[in-house]
Image 1 (tube, one colour):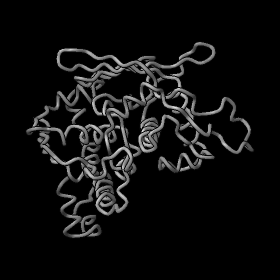
Image 2 (tube, rainbow, N blue to C red):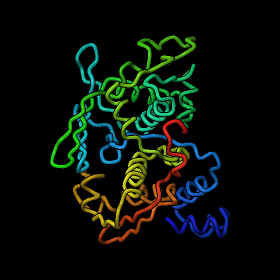
Image 3 (cartoon, rainbow, N blue to C red):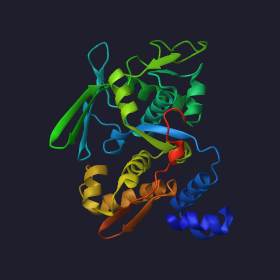
Image 4 (cartoon, one colour):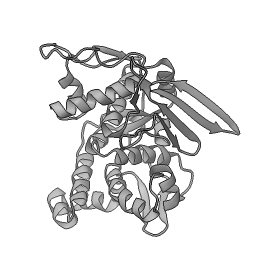
Length: 309
């Protein structure tokens, strides 16, 4: 993907489109890389560093407990229950990730567990770069419901010891109980409070990201996970690290039975994640895997400040 950034700088976006945009995914990568290189605002988003190693499911799952093993970090997400004690499901997909990124960014930016959602559904959706519409609204509301009710358990292994953190994403529900009135001014609560344990862990382990990068990959949950993973791993590497396709499959595609199908399916998302991270130095070997090299953070050090987002 470094080639795309170099071509954009040398030839400009129109010529790069002509030379390096034969497929739909290549065109998407060119547009995403162009957006990153021409971004003047350089707004910062925040994710919990734990999500670099363990993330939510990409698709809807019937399981009431989602388990993601990221080596030193393991995450359990348990579905919440409704009034009838029926599981409502584990949050999943790109929309759930965007909701959480928005909540986490606002919490760190304002140094507060209380997050203002805005006066209307439209304001919140616009903040997450989602188009407003009936179908999108229903999807956001469903993921909000799942996020509001689920329980989290983080297991972290360090220095021969295991640390366990129990909690949730939010303390209060994100939405009112009744949204059946179309004339209602606000379809969301004005303020939501993050769970105290999750908030403190977020403050202790924030991972800065480029907001424009998230917007460019906002519909691709695997690309979001890969971008967050690279943003966490690359700038703390002391030396190059080779990761086999089998190891990548274990972390990002354990549901795949055959390695060749995983390798085929991950490549578009990996290329897209690299297109929005021009500082990343990553070499891809079709046969053996990928090699990560020590690289700058996607956010310049002067921007990495809890009060300076």
